Amino acid sequence: MTRFDFSDYFLRHTRARTFHGETCCRMASFFAQHGRGYISGRPLEKGHRHMHHRNRRHYGGLDTASNTFYEHKGYHRLIHSNDTAEIRKLVVELSVTEEELRQIDQLRFEAHMRPLPPETVRLSAS
Ligand SMILES: [Zn+2]
Image 1 (cartoon, helix red, strand yellow):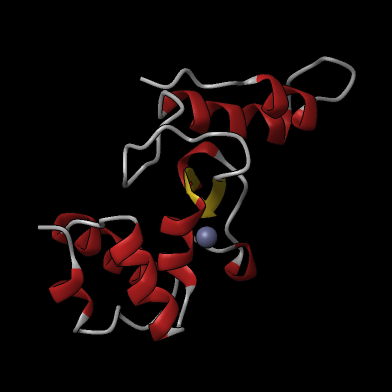
Image 2 (cartoon, rainbow, N blue to C red; image 1 turned 90 degrees about the horizontal axis):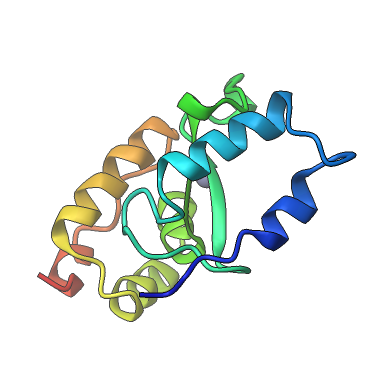
């Protein structure tokens, strides 16, 4: 199992070595997930993790632990992308399962996105 490296996270998100407010909420999300993707369960390594806002900031969503989670950047793209070619490529490359696609579709609904293209299910890993 890959050990997660927190160091870059701390360095990027700390001010004067203190944790408070927004930073604290972001950390709460991160630790609650044990450093793994919310949907995929994959270890979220440096440079591959994105934060998702369930209720988008555009619609007034806050940067709180209950409104955010971390996910592998490819899975995060699957929530937001409308590019069918990109979606197909990611589903195959990441071996996304049918169950994961269901979760992604729910998150797309919450994010006011169209459902994944129907053919995506045929490309899923199981
Ligand atoms: Zn997002």
